[in-house]
Image 1 (cartoon, helix red, strand yellow):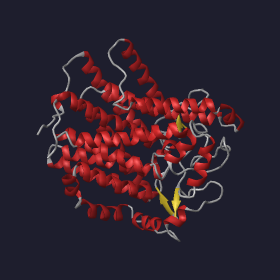
Image 2: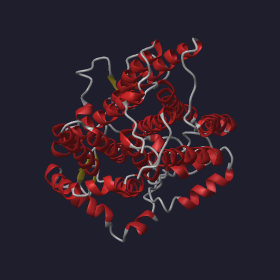
Image 3: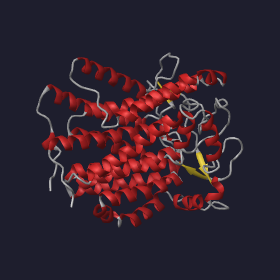
Image 4: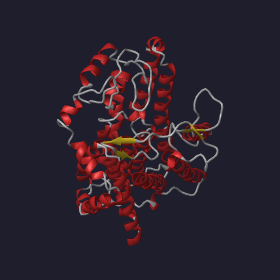
Length: 461
């Protein structure tokens, strides 16, 4: 059996390796910005036609630095075997906007459509930057730890919000005067109970981001040196899971189920080893967020049942996921190849004009939304990226032993959760969770590539 040691794969002390380490720290900073500065709530005080948010500025600076390195021949464009779907996704969305320009203009959606396209391109840029710049497995792990650390900080703030109704992320500007608040994150409730939002745009998006981070945190705990460090990271994992449940999101529960299935596939013994933690988690959630478990019970048992609820539509905006399928397919049939254009459907938490091709449906299903907005091209590209990442990292994890294999397994589980979660919320409208997915996906695929370059792969017993 081959075991890959993270330290053993570190490159020689060359200018490139120093640059790689610098990139790891820089990308770790970007991850913390994504976690800790609420997207669409704060902007930099710069007079531009669009809101210049801190994470956008950081990505622009990093992209410029990477381009300088590329000109000097010190780096190259890499996509982890997903170059075709990434190109298809970006080019397809751009062509969709151009093809539907007249309809989008008539609906008054030019700004919204261009903004949506810019968000989509930022996801792809983040993926390519992470994959192309990290040159060692230890650098991959550094960025992954930043993902976990940022998630734990947000989870703690979320649990505080659940108990006190005080969201610290609505009050950052007094401490960070270079930020200008655009608006506060509104409080979301269900059955009269607060659903925490923390630094996210919506409780569902927060729950999805936090629960995706749980397997990464367990990986850090499993690889920790020393009993105290291991217990600390296990505790951090419980905090992440507790805060995710505090969002009272059924999406989180569906993600947990699929993540458990993927976990059993890639690391059955490790998953079974952690099962005793589950009752401890439920007890901790009951005391840390007393109303969470009862809220989840009511969410899972609405009057008339979940299926009946999802077949109904509330007013003109809807959220009955099953009820949206028929109308969504009829909208797709009008423009089957390129869709009706990015950003042309109403999104949760925002009031926009009439959709370019008619209809006022909020699609709580990113696959269906992408089919309508991006057409068959966008749908295929999205599914290819998401499920392709799950398949590649899961397969690699079963052929790589040691810490690297565990890292790949954790990424496969996290991405599996995202892949099923976006079936019940329009994930690309929520920048934080989707940016984190693309970062984590790039980390996993980069780790797999570095493992292949290091030593021959052997199956894990």
